[in-house]
Length: 197
Image (cartoon, rainbow, N blue to C red):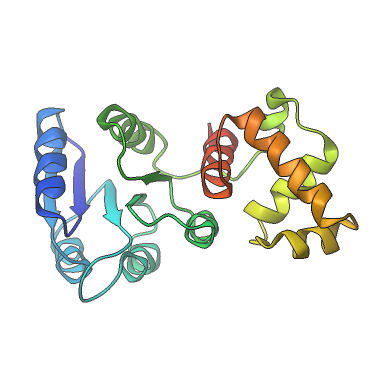
């Protein structure tokens, strides 16, 4: 039976997620802080860690770093109420399996856990996988800057691509429509999922 660790400081959400995971055939343990989660990781083996990014004492970023340094085979799923483009990009760079913003659907988290357990070891991005979204070469270049290199400022993207800032905004609007999202953070999250499916 796969073991799941849930690191979340919000009591109700932590209890609910733990209950849902245990009711879905997993063995779930919870921790209120990153420090508590690291203690649990030192005691036993986990298949998946679901963690918030903002927690008291030590943030989720430190927990994720600990996992990748000491337990590289453990899949990490981020849940956060404070999504930013930077946090989504950093998640990608460190190899986080999935990234959800609160509120999220329970079935989406369960699906991510199931996929994480099936894959265990994440495969690298395959840009061919997003061709089905009908993106242009320029849009792909823009997405690569966002996702792989963490270039998030429109002016920096424009400079790198040799186009105007207004053109970057136009391309982003097209991409929001193609991926059915309304902001940069959601775009990055959806693209990551598409690249890894």
